[in-house]
Amino acid sequence: MIGKKGSDWILSKKIISLLVIMTLVFSNAVSVVFAENANIHVISDTTELKTVEGEILGNVTTVTTIERSEGSQGVKNVITESKKFNLNPEYENNKNYTEIFSDTLTVNTIFATYDYKVYINGELMNDKEPSMGLMAVDKAGIPSVCHYYSNNTMTSYTFACYESMNYNWVGDHAKPDPEGSNIQKQATASNQWFATAKNGVDLFAMQFSTFDTALMTLMIEVGGTIAGLSWSAIGAIIVGGGLAAALAGNVINQWSSSKTYLGKAYSYIEKL
Image 1 (cartoon, rainbow, N blue to C red):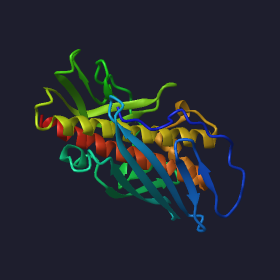
Image 2 (image 1 turned 90 degrees about the horizontal axis):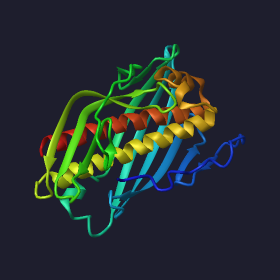
Image 3 (image 1 turned 120 degrees about the vertical axis):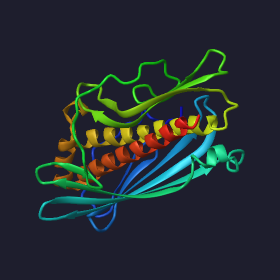
């Protein structure tokens, strides 16, 4: 599975400085930069790309710019995110990899009202009850939402995926919950869409790991636990301003990207 390098990072100390320009650096190469304008924050992250077998494909650098503005009804964050994929020479001309790991530029508008409702591009984020999800032995991906696994000889693979997801904040181990239609397909490496579908699931898992890291970073800053969160609670953090608000905006943006990559993985699996 593609994972974030150094996922067991720790934040060495809380930020107490009030410098106009300051940078937080984590052991997994994440940094938060405050521009001279206190309403603009830039988050940079470099992640190593690996196959489930541990083979290094290259890396991806994500730069997220968060622009905050306050209005009469709430706080708006316009979040621009660029992803730059750098594939190793043996993969950079292979369409099974370049189609999946291609540079992107996305812009999301996150609006938090003063009564703490959160909207992504006009869509209200709702806290929902948990559901069961897929049950299977996992090899790569997230078992409850979208993953694949092989037989013992690795000659045949089973793919299972939902088309969307929400986040279940209930309990000490918050997790994604599936939504919408689901599919299950079996395929071998000879299938023309096999590598694309497999890479699509890997990229979704990597992106969700980025969301998870963003969420952990926010929890360290506010001194809370995931069990005490909800989308409305994150909305309250955004309204509150400061570093925590920028980190909360990044959490929502990474969640939105995770849903986008899940949808892509679902569409690739449909073609198997």
